[in-house]
Each structure stands twice: as C-alpha cells, then as structure tokens.
Length: 172
Image (tube, rainbow, N blue to C red; front, side):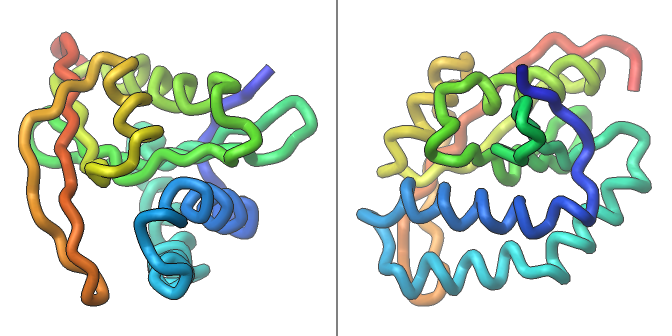
C-alpha cells in the first residue's frame, strides 16, 4: 500500500535521495555525471526544497506531494504549480528506480486530478530522449503539444511539452 501526503521539511533528505537515484538512472546516458550532480545540488538543495515546501503549506491544496510505501520509506514525489487560468505545470515527478512500476507515480498524478477539481490542463516538459518519462505520460493520456530547445550549464537539449486536458468544474 502506498500513501500520498503533502511534503514536509522533514522529508527533504529522502526527496534528495530519490532525486539523485532517479536522475542517475534516467539521465546517465544523456548527461555527464558532473552535470547531473550539479543540477541535483542546485535544484534539490536544502534551501530550494525547504522554500518550496514552506510555500506549499500556504496553498489551499497541497501541490508538493510525496509517496510513502508500507515500510514508511519515501519512494517518490511530485510538485506542480499554477500556470495561468486553471492550468498547472508538473515541475517534477520522480520515483525511486527500484519502485518504478509500483503505482507510486500514478497515485501522485491521480491525487492532483482528484483534489484540483477546477483544473482543465496539466502539462510537463520532458527530455525528448527520456523514454521512461515519455512512456509514462503517454500511458496516462498526455499528448505531445510542442518542443523547445533548452540550454542549462552549457548543455542544450530538446524538451517536449506533454499536456493532459481534464474536465474541470466550478470548484477551486
């Protein structure tokens, strides 16, 4: 059984561990180890994560979620943010490599769809060569809508925007 709950600052070390393991497993063939470690160090620093989690606790609905297995281990996380009228961007969704295909990613995504009832669109930017990520989103009904070039730390890559259109009602 996997439980989904709002991220807490006490989760930061486990989120960092999942991020590191997932990035190494997903991107080791696409990016150098120096690039991966540098990105993880910046994007998942104590300061960055604590700020994101603290801001999330001010939101009416949790936007930074974690997946916990029955042993109490954090095995995945997801983080979204509003991007315009009833549209949200999925900033990150990662599951520990040894727990991928456990349903954790699906449960994280499902939690957003159940709690953000006014949402009409959810999108994520996915590295074009990230076959695992692209397959996950396509299986969940996301469709590619555009591409863009992105340069980070001197490395240029192609990102694909995947979008899921959902119903949305009048609730917030």
